[in-house]
Picture 1 (cartoon, rainbow, N blue to C red):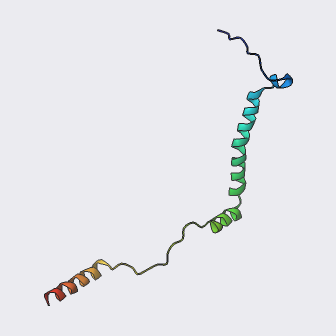
Picture 2: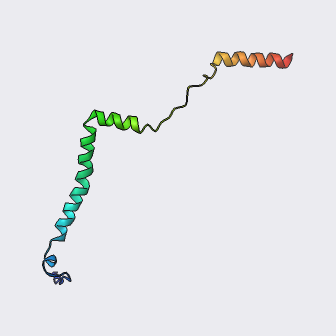
Picture 3: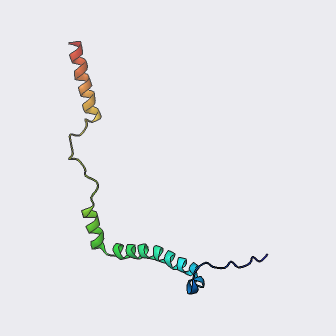
Length: 86
């Protein structure tokens, strides 16, 4: 089944322009520019170090007191038990 060709409503040369190739070109730009920029940035260690230093999202709090070990907990529980009996 062959469908009849529709007449274009665009004037003159624009009616004959291959719009599909324009879309292919735009798509290739949308894909190649981010990939190219990524390779340009990633291949230079100074850039990566700058990004890591500038955008340090993790801000760890200062280290506090460490929790007691198992032996220390047993001693604390024994003292508490002795105080309750006394």
